[in-house]
Image (cartoon, rainbow, N blue to C red; front, side, top):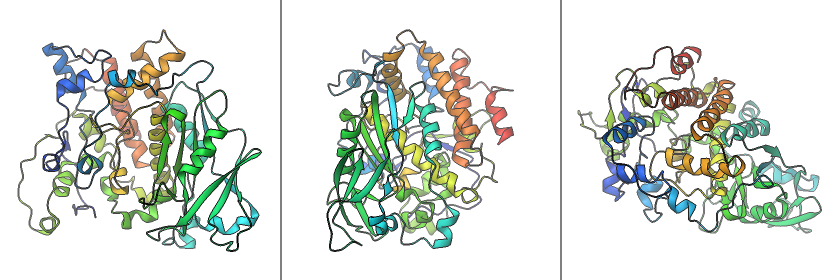
Amino acid sequence: MPPKVSSACAHEHAQHDVSLHAEEAGFKRPSLARRKAAMTLSGRATRSGRDEKHHQHLETLFPGPLVLPNDALAIDLTEPPQSMKSWMQGKLRNPVTQERKTIYLAPVPGVAKQLSSVRNWAVPSTVSASHRQACKPPETDHVREYLKAFYHPLPVKLLPQGLCFVPWDVAKDRLRPKYIGLQAGDGVTRVRTRPSPDGVFYRQLNLNDILDAAIETLPDDAYALVILVDHDLYEDDDDDFCCGRAYGSSRVAVVSSARYHPSLDHDAGVDRKHMWPASHCAAYVRDACRPPAARDSKRRRVVQTGVLSASPGTAMVAVIQSAPPALKPENDLEGLWLSRVVRTVSHELGHCFCLAHCSYYACVMQGTAGMAEDVRQPPYLCMVCLAKLTRAIRGVDQGMDETKFQISRYMALARFCGEHLQVAMFAAYRCWLYKRIEMLKTQDAAPGKVLENSNLARCTEET
């Protein structure tokens, strides 16, 4: 369950580095020198004092991973960080070319009339009928528009042929068929089903079977294909559930919106007051690292490492406080649901570019061990992962200026967020984007300089 923090938490301090729990868990974050080197093709970084100071300034906007108890990086230390050099040397990486550069998005498959009971499998057992009507799943067009901005300037299109779940055989039990088919064009792929182990949904679909169908459906001009589903997924017998999976070298992915339903937040231990960016609130991080019994005791003053004070112009504090209190998640549950799904879709597609899970910074490419951690992670690519994506996209624009490319990409994302300012995450993300754009435009400015009359100031006035 999430730590208990006052409902009036002002988020006055931002957590800049890993939490105190990281050392206890055995996680050792790569040093500043290694983080700088990870962005280069050579695997080596310059050692000038000015460059190091500038990089430290950048990291006020790119904090480290939190590594709270039960986070992925706290329980699985086996996956090494992937530098730019190791990404370039990867043998399974597929180049982006003029002939193969389109990202395809497949909308949620339809359901044949003979499988009417299968529609109900996508409804959480804890959600009332009235709540279902008030909270619609994310719209495919919104997901596509987000991907167009995130993977700018690559084209993002809907898959031409629709997908549909159809009967696989004449099942004796039509309410609980062991197999169903996923039809795409003239082909049908068998999809295994099983009861949901935790009972949150009636039955689940096997994601490996859906990815097999995706491989068969991949258009010739596609760089990648991602299939959206609204049913709960599982990967193998050891899984309770899985929200998304990619076969990176095969350039296919599947993402389920099921577990992101806002009505499941309480049981999943989600603290809506401390989703990203408020997940980097130092008070929240401090309490999350305390033993459960101590969270209810009288609080003492704790000296926390890795904390940035709430001085004017401090990047993460400004972003955390950018969304006005009026933008409460419950005011727009559909937007809240959308913000979660697009983050996971962009993550899984990142694997199709052979981006591994990230441990250099808080990053959309981080791995996750559960829903509570999922919503604490940012929607952006860290500097290391963006350097890889930038290199990949150079395959269709060899002469591009990387700084101009990054600014245009950030502006595309800011425009999308500007159309969804009623959603707290997008409002905060927009401010983060404007702050990053200002940093790129003023790379020679003194670290810590307050940018008056900037886009950052404007975005806080408009939200």
